[in-house]
Image (cartoon, rainbow, N blue to C red; front, top):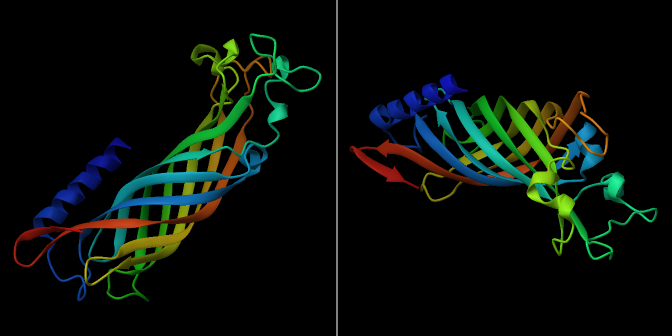
Length: 251
């Protein structure tokens, strides 16, 4: 990852130093900074744990004059869609499936999904549609890291086991290597005012439980997992490049 960052930084400097032209007429060397959101359906072992996930993220790509792209991106995963929450916290539940609070009443337990993705990618823009040679169908392939867990808390903070130092034994923290694919459309307008992307994205994660001890299992979980995500992603693009004459424009 360190070498990927060095290469991308070098390309960014090259973009700043040499790239200039008219976006409507020619393929440009440019930097694309993006912010996007998507909704994903979990698959495999992840699908057994969660029923859906939002992903809010951002990144940047360097696109060269042959429309190849090289990029880094990251995203934050979140949702409250934990499947079958009664299957967790088994050692704390009564015969009725309830968790008892400190004052002896039934605790209102909240279980959410939290996670992150980090990714390095290579791709290409095929200028078969769009207003200019820098727009078109985008195909990217990447490799990266996926991590997710069940965030657990009691609404009235009245369950000692959910304090920060104890919560880790229940949260099923999971992570590992991922492969990533994206196919969609990238629109860079000639007016430089409307730059966006939309497409389908997929992740295939080869993960394991990262905790040394899980109370529900009474030990460490060493099982290999397959955690998949597929969903629709859209976002806005900020372009950085030089137009003639030698001036910077940010859109």
